[in-house]
Image 1 (cartoon, rainbow, N blue to C red):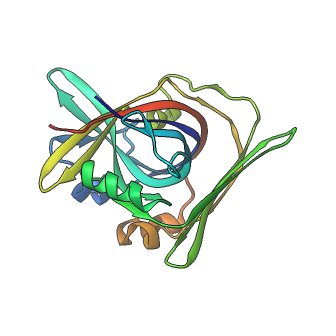
Image 2 (image 1 turned 90 degrees about the horizontal axis):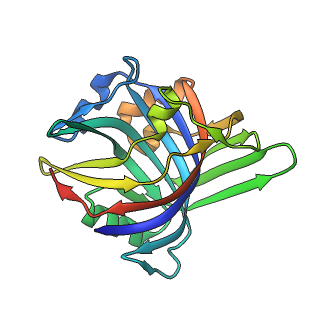
Length: 234
């Protein structure tokens, strides 16, 4: 049964290779870290929710909002099928009701903070920026990109990062799964970027090292309509 429908639009995905040992305590029981060419990744992701509905109902003042999250990649074997999914370290949104629903129903790790976004397009490029306040400190990510979206090529790092269709969470030593459906996304080649994020402040000491290294890749995807199913224990 579908719990949530929406559009996820203009997703900035900032990707870093990471020592798998750092993620060991965050891995839900029964899942395994997913690797691309032997590398483990975390991604800082900023995007916009649009046309959001819960159980098919539009919720006043909660249809359009920003989200920024830090996530990593896992897989879960069901019978003979490997499902590729993500685990969230933390998800930031500007609406307290969203935090309450996500943390209560989906056992996620949402936090409410002030947020805003800027989308500008001129004849040369798109400019996309997501801004939030964490403990009175300004945080932001931005990209400038080419105007035309192109297909994400198969068997690339970009496909590995963008194409995951399950979410996994751990709660009281239990693992919960929910499916996210959407078509394959296109991306806009990124021309330049800006990152002003204190990873320790936002995500804890384990991720402080991200303050001092450059990302391995940056994507801007167009996104699409999406649906999120009810969670189930696995």
